[in-house]
Length: 279
Image 1 (cartoon, helix red, strand yellow):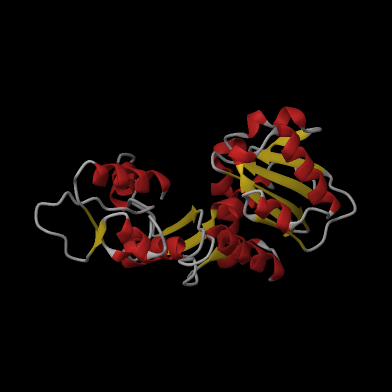
Image 2 (cartoon, helix red, strand yellow):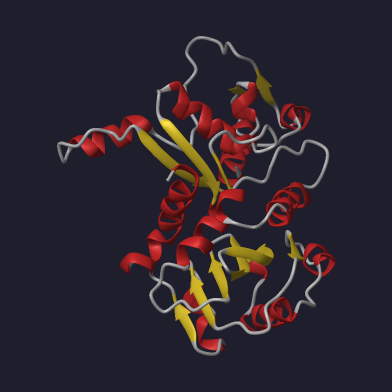
């Protein structure tokens, strides 16, 4: 949403016009009046001659072309992970997103609690992916990127549970304690707000059970929630593209590379979710 919104603002500031369908406009803000105030004209029927830009998370045409290069048909089932902040037109989407994560923990915290065969209405980005795949008769599963990476990291052969798993992404850092196949404590913040010392302090207090939601949220992050913490964390697993900046400050971290590759951590989590929900 961010880069798209910035490009739209630049385009309008240059004297040009932008039209968007109501669904596409949600990429810029969940409150469509806010989108209109930017100068975007929301309509299902733009004037002739407009350049048509289709926004979506899954480009099935490109995927079919890529598969066909290897004489392979596009699979009839696809699992997709996206980061969904939730539909929140009048409220901080940081709060809405963390409410969704908290509810999954309270529901049990197992991988199936974070994955969906049909996502609820509040998960608007996941529903857009799900609808797109269903319209093409594809058997779909959708999941959030953070939990997908957390559960995927557990496949590293050096993992010992209970484990603290940290996924340090380009935009967000999410950490969770996983015990007996369940996430029992979790926090999420923005990677740009992290320093090695700050992350180490957050990790320590998460494991002690003293980290608070208020502390993380008021610092500009998404939040924290603790159901319970184990007596001992047996391993620390770190994954994500920005992990190299932080691992040197940690004690004996495992740089998780499930199935041999760090960059497929989330994909491994999706496979685990598919197996959990569909066998």
